[in-house]
Length: 313
Image (cartoon, rainbow, N blue to C red):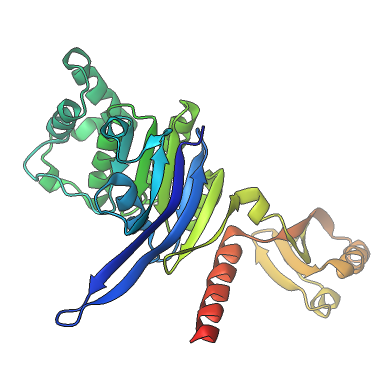
């Protein structure tokens, strides 16, 4: 059974002051998220990611369409107990401590009183806030507040977790910890649906991703499938700091890092480069095909969308 089935969800707002005009924030969206996967919802700012999440949370109402979450209608109140949600810019009362805040959310989400204190301590440990649990939130950095938000989303051990830009405001170590936490949630059998525009995180984490731009779904699939196409080039790595002139003459893109040289050449020039390295008595380390990155796939989808939009104007 899919964890999420989005069935033609659409959102049109009325904008303007005197003369209202319609603005389509989300075109009819069809999307399925399988149970137990980490699913990335990718797109630039203003693409419709947050609108989609708000629709699924019931924070705004759709113009058309519906959805099913964990096999039930997304408007079913019983579904809410099975999901956790971190909004993009959460706000918490400044004068509560992290422990007090999670205690409060534990009561709201129905965590049994006899287990609540233990669960709060466990979550504070998970999100890296054990040492500052008694500090008021007004003294927290943005990244620390983000961790508190993640904590309240997972406190009641939901089956499905929605994160809207969970890496926002985090330093590299904090982002690594959040990635580890998402992988742990998946290991526990939970489904994670998160929006982001940080493609490196999505490429590292996600089983599948969807790309949305200007309110329209532009592509969806497993990361390894989207990035599997070979560009007709190979990367040749050898030990050393010098690039033979004959390799440069082939038009190779060369980069020297420490005691290694990386050169990207056309696939049909691979044998010629190997022969040059053999003559120059250079130690070959690796030859790998250059594959499309998630970033390249993402940019290509957006360029095509903009070209199509421009041609229809």
